[in-house]
Image (cartoon, rainbow, N blue to C red):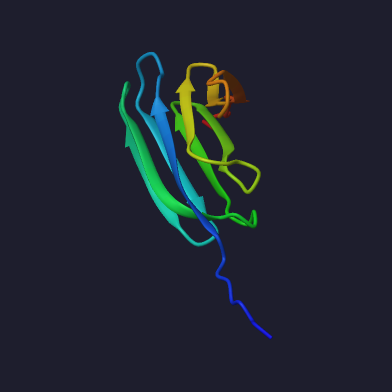
Length: 118
């Protein structure tokens, strides 16, 4: 009898968040269950990103909270249903993802305004 031991399979993955706003600094705070990447200020036309090894069993999850002036949004930057690198463009109306096979962009999440208390 032959016994073959296997390791969890992983896939090298990169996530990139790009500030495509018309004229504002973007605050992006991204994390997973195990890794808090901290809040990052991204100026217009620039991006931030990180690489990691995604477990192909589908348990890897990263999400981001974005803020600009009085607007906020949260979105899933990577989960087990996504394959390969993930590119996110933050625009004046929300965050856009790029589909892997066609490079077509889609609106993932729109901004929501927060009420300021006086």
